[in-house]
Length: 382
Image 1 (cartoon, helix red, strand yellow):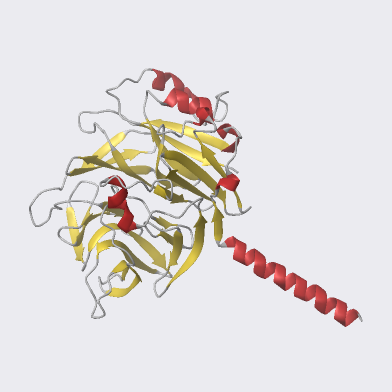
Image 2: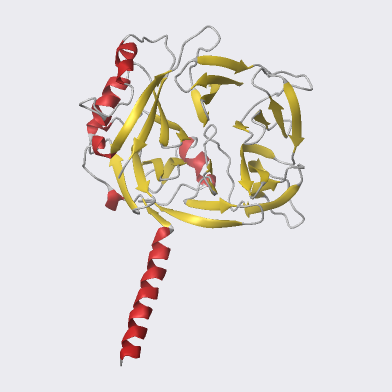
């Protein structure tokens, strides 16, 4: 009898474990998680970093922020030109990468960049030349790596002691079977190791340079553009790790042009303009449905999530008042400007008690429309 009882308990335990393992793969950003709680309740702490405004660094539109040790690397879009600036984590201007041009050691265009995790040089993804070009912090050319595709995003990642390069492509070369792949992985010799995730539908429009790759402590994750799927990439394999559960399907690539250029009325059938950011502990996702913005937080440890909407909480500051641009070791890098930061802080920290550097409040109050944007390093909780 005791053996039967133990067997039943063991089966129940195994079934529970299997169920919990299945739930780990789903990130709930559905409207069931939509909350009326104040946004201040999910702010653990933050610091304010006004970017120093100089004649060498006057920034209008930030596309991406990467934090590496004690430095920030900021990619700016100015028409067809891409400017890359180096700042301290306190916001002091250090240098600008000045290597764009038509020479053999220069890059012609830039869709993305990364800092090599071992050699710590700046690597620039040049899609036109189909190369990654490397420079030191003084813009001196170091070397380059050629690849086969038109790349829109890339990152280095470790697998064991080796460094690999993963490129998210816009138009990979066709295989003999007629397939085109979204992901290409290269080794340190510049050799293609494998391609993965064949394109299922056309992706005719791109919204800037969306950030979809995240180098975590012992993992590397990638959210496939125009889907709700997140993958783990290793040197020899790729596997799905998360399914993002949105209120509606993600607008597929072949519908983007119909919706945004041809005026097809489908905004109420999909979520779109999805921005996904992942840190060691949290996932933050911004998305739009039926022309209304939403953003959600997911705690990996507790498997809890919350979704916020400016329609429900007008004080939340999420209606275009901030943009997530990067990840740091404890959370996310958010951009705002002098005209919006007061409203944002009223939502994030109405009592002004969670800021780790409150001495900058006076500095922020003195900024004007000629000032560079303000960055917030925010640590969230759910």
